[in-house]
Image 1 (cartoon, helix red, strand yellow):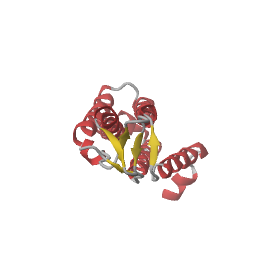
Image 2 (tube, one colour):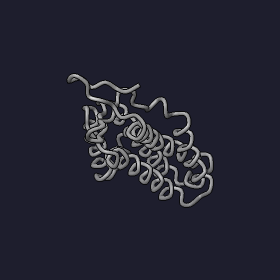
Image 3 (cartoon, helix red, strand yellow):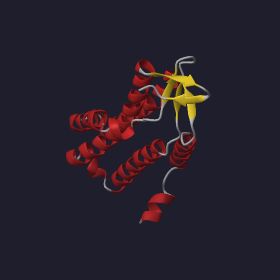
Image 4 (cartoon, helix red, strand yellow):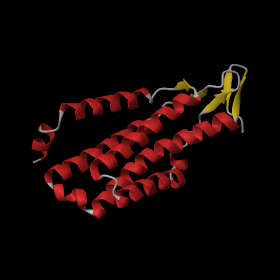
Length: 176
């Protein structure tokens, strides 16, 4: 059954997976990035997850409440888990210096996995599209994973606004 699901998966789904893996691997290396770029990926993930919820469950109230609760929970409870404590902001350039991390790749793969699971479940059991518990649980997961991207972005943007770092004797030291 599993192989049948995989073989019947549209090619574009694997292209999306490849793009997510490439994007996630790119984030495993240290980067210097501006505030706009720090915001783009989280906004894309928020848009994709909300679009996935609406595309799958429609404007169903339970699904939208689940998605909103997932985003809110991620922003409130996940912010410390996704914070980037070694990141710092250059006062001279205004760029954020962010160390490489496997976390974004993990979050992207988890979100993709949940979306794939939901899609396969709905293909096998179309009645799940009207099941409030299934809709709320999937939507909460979509909102939660994409909300973690937003929480990480928010922490980096706050760092850029509040705590620029200084370059001292060739070493970069975060301001405390």
